[in-house]
Length: 597
Image (cartoon, rainbow, N blue to C red):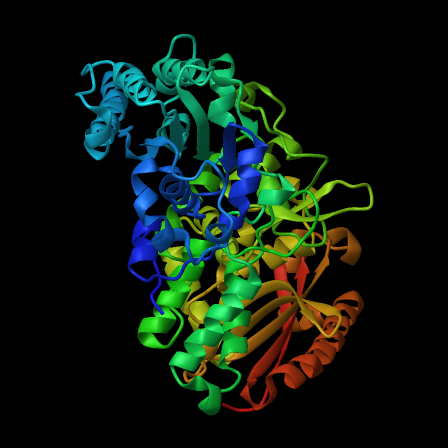
């Protein structure tokens, strides 16, 4: 199998024999949905690949290739009447450089519009019968010229706009004045969309399909383009981009057959599927709960590694998505943003919102209440949260979609909790020692010295078991070595934190770990922080409430161990750790080793 990792061109995918997940059966429904459509999905979620599918299907210049491109696909068996009937013009706003001054950004946008129309003229040269007009400082001249030339040939134009909000988003997150100048009043971006709206009113643009990440920019250009229909949550199109689990499983089965694993390693496909499910699955884009979707870029990244090396990638987070942590940083900087992100890591009390906010612009981001519906919607559009379920009131339950996104959250918290190099190096050394020895003492020492001491009395209002668990999650997260989960489901119970060695890393001296946390406030134990700091751990462990908490955690861990031993068999090298936090002052623990390595 060949996988189009890094390739979003439908024509190349089909003509060069790459894997393609067929969504062409949705083309008929898209035609019926409306003439000016908006489709929002997180970055690197297959939007461009779908846009190029539309381009090849509707392009009249590709009519002679229809059977080669679509004959074996769903739409090829029953095409619509509009197939290969348009002149197609495509804009890609991710190509507009937003790094310069405002005048340079305006010129970059004009340059892009002019360049795309110039390519349009070359592609249709034998059909247009003449040169297209353009103006170096006004890309809309070229747009109108392309539309007029198409109409002169008795055809309308299909306009595809990819990443409509890309360069504007870059400005929005750091250069507010320049952003406002582009989208407000007679700003150039607003003017461009006003022109599209006008030309789509019976003047030559028959259809428009727009992709992007969020509705923020469209809300800011408001009346400039208020005619699009948002199909992002339409039940017919929730899986328009992304891979289903059935598709992922079929690919893994085929790879297993190609690599001859069926006889020598019959459980390989199932294990690879479980790994991918943990790391990449879990995105949902409809209001009704349904099967999760796999991020297509990450899935192809994983498939490509399996096909070329026979093993999963060492780094489960593709570096092409690592920049998404900037989106989380942006939300954290908003009032109460950090609180929402903390809640997102708590599976017992996830963020709940009545509905997603659809029409909110940058002014709203400055003036509107920064409540859970607002910030939760923003994180949803960025792909940092997804729709997990509906509660008993019908509210939307938001959550972190998978482990690769959790990694982005963890890295953000790590930057906040351990900003200094010496502390981070001490943490790394203590964590790595724990992975192979099961000794918690060095890690506890680092956490008490470098982390717990930074809290003050005000933080006790918010302290609980989740606070402590989050600290350990951040301190121990290591996706190269472990599949690390919070609230791991084990035989109908839920362990607080698990570190299960990745299959491809089991040949090394790494231990599996299971941690259970208990939290006791200073009020619970009737002592001051100063008093706790003067006592030895042995003295504290003998306090009745502390001893009872350690006993309770150990009993839970013993039950969880049985479930894991049944699941992993002889491969398991499990150490369990009961941890009790006494406020933010002291940490006590008991560790139980497993079978020797």
